[in-house]
Length: 172
Image 1 (spheres, one colour):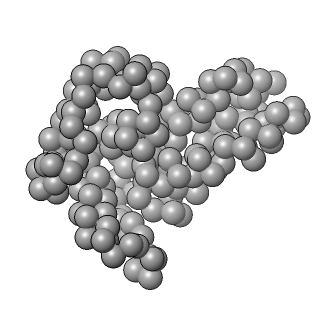
Image 2 (image 1 turned 180 degrees about the horizontal axis):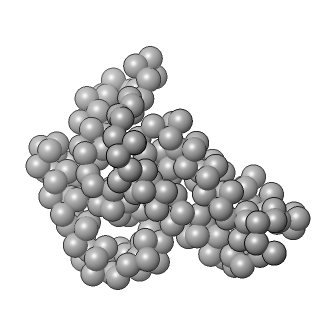
C-alpha cells in the first residue's frame, strides 16, 4: 500500500542502526549539519513509504541514492542558491589539520553535485566504482570520468597535489 508508513519493526531497527552513518554521509554531501539532517529525514521518509519493496541488503544504497538525488535537486533549485556556513566557527579542529581541512572543504563545496557525490562516495564512504555507479544510477565509466574531473579540480583548487589521493584505475 503506497503512502502507508511501515509497520515492520525492521525499518525502525534499520534507522537506529544506520542513522549516524547516513548523517555523516549527508553532511559530507551538503557541507551543512542542518541540510544534512533535512536530507536524511526526507530520504528516510521516502524509504519508509517504500520499505516493503526495498530489499534489506540494498537499503543503504537506496537511501544514499535518495540523499544524493535530493541534494542535486536542491542544488539545481533557484530557491536554494543561498549558501550557509559549512561549520560553526567555534568547532574544535586539530590545529595541524585546520588550514588543510578548510581548504579541502571549500574546494569540495565548489564541486558540481555529481562530482561531489562521486568523491564523497569514493573517499569518504570507501565504495568501489561499481557500488558508486549503483548508488548514482550511472555507468562505471561515468563514475571514472566524474572522479577524474573532480580530482583535477580539487588538486588545482587546493594545491595539495602530493597530499591528495592519487587517481586509481579501480577501487575494488
